[in-house]
Length: 206
Image (cartoon, rainbow, N blue to C red):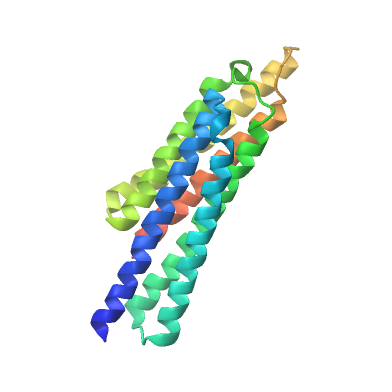
């Protein structure tokens, strides 16, 4: 009976990894759309988000099945609790990726000289997400700490971008893009990073 229970827990872990990797794929599609204006991937972003939602729903169902049909000990209950928290983070990451995609529709690829700043934020954000997803499968305390510490890098980069836009507006620079849209996109990236940090913190307790 315990062997079957372990198989169910493994199935949950495998599904977390698959859904997390779907988030990474959606993020890469978003990068191609936002920074390269590859319009062919726009609908693919939303298709991937639907897969993410389906994946998180499946994980929640698997967890409920284990709770109702098995007799998990304290350690197992801790794992399931962590999984449910991670599932919520993955779902929100998927949602925020689609929010950025929608905002990106009206933004020119050039981004009025702000492209490098936004690219930098996106790059670190993606690295944090990739690390958090893979680290759940093979926990590493040092890797988790790196993700948590990188949150400060994202916060600092967002503040620098915000100040740069403010300076451009005060200087009377003519912007082809709506600075509010650029800031919102950066804010969504920051939130994705926050969710990656949540996942990394959860992994330290697995």
